[in-house]
Length: 109
Length: 113
Image (tube, rainbow over all chains, first blue to last red; front, side, top):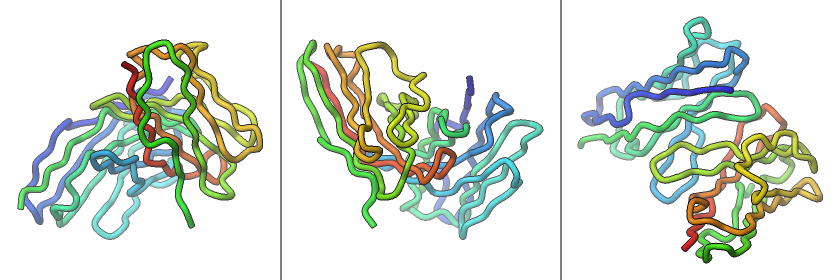
């Protein structure tokens, strides 16, 4: 089955700077890679996703890149704000998603 | 429109009891998923429905866990003879089709004493 690894587990960034979270996956049959933001006591909220026929996708301050050959994908958040503080999860798969272990992002004002 | 809703939001039960957790997907979404999230971990897949049928139940940990979706909309996750290790947040998600974007509900926090 799929195995998704995520790094780093914690990340502290000065407000206004960029944050990068990286994930690798094992199953070359996986075609869908979403990123979720989870705040304490809430369900995961989709922030951006990418499918395997695309190498990069951007939505305002958030971008995701996918390297199918190397089986890794990354989340980039620019101009970070305090409200970006949360736990972020990457996932990979098709219908069934396998999640990474999460990155706790803290934005320092 | 409304998002995915789950009830109850919290459930406390005693070891050995039976519990039912309910999920109302986004209207029109044909696919429904159950995941389980333990503290400090990412969600783990349990089961996926396409319409009324379970298309993939490979994540159900054992035969104490069962899920139904009789009319292709609302789903119920049923856990028999609960154990303390079943304590977790049970998340439900839905999507337009089998490979569509999955939108999650707020989860049900289950505590087995």
